[in-house]
Amino acid sequence: MAISNPSSALSITIATRESRLALWQAEHVKALLQDLGHRVELLGMTTLGDQILDRSLSKVGGKGLFVKELEVALDEGRADIAVHSLKDVPMDLPAGFALACVMEREDPRDAWVSPGCATLAELPAGAVVGTSSLRRLVLLRAALDALGRSDVRIEPLRGNLDTRLRKLDEGQYHAIVLASAGLKRLGLGERIRHIFEPAESLPAAGQGALGIEVRADRSDLVEALKPLVHMPTWLRVAAERTVSRAMGGSCSMPLAAYADWTGGDAGHLVLRAAWGDPEGALSLVQVSDQADVQTLEQAEALGQRVAKALRAAGARPPAAGA
Image (cartoon, rainbow, N blue to C red; front, top):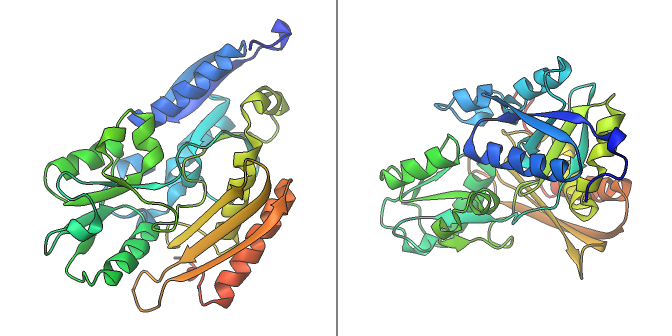
């Protein structure tokens, strides 16, 4: 529905990465804002995270590499909003920036993509599985250990979604694990051989959700973005992101956190979290808690309790400087 008062229409520039998935996300937000009567254009940018592809994120500065240049564009006034995959957004935004909107979540689960193996159990001897995530690494290792498959190697996989699929198709990997949301948004759902239920592979905090960042002083944009807010999703990801924040969350943190409602999109929230040792010396730690949640403060309180339970069960925050 278009805005009722045309004088309140804004001219909005969206800063976005130039990967196909990032552009889809930005175009999606652009269309929704245009339907509300705003004038919208895109500012495509290549971030440092897109340029450094030969090392894992945990070794080159973390997920903030994907958002820093976009934040500079906001700060300089070259753009008004930035659209992010929320799982790529650092847990604490820099001073002067705010998360103004969390949109309705796509499928948050992990996807198994393989040309020849329908499941982990079908991997051939000495197979190579690719992932860019320490979280997926520790969860995959636990699943492979349960199958007695110490022969399977888990190797780093960087690049945008199309690059990762190309590396798989070239035979560099027998299978890769990706986010279901990105594949579905780009119409690539047919590449998915298996979707891991959360009990099999607990998702990352914020996975499948889009967040929109603004300068904290742009109250006009916060108001304009209100129709795009999906509060049931925001409450879920607030609980998840609080776990990660409380654990010192970063790309060097092999942490999963996933919240879901029982009986619909409001009321009782169940939050599960898992932590693994990337060196494989400690067992996978898994905890859960639940609460009636109606506000962001209640969601964050639940996240704090789960983070405390993780630490009590043996999970360790990353070492300083990691």
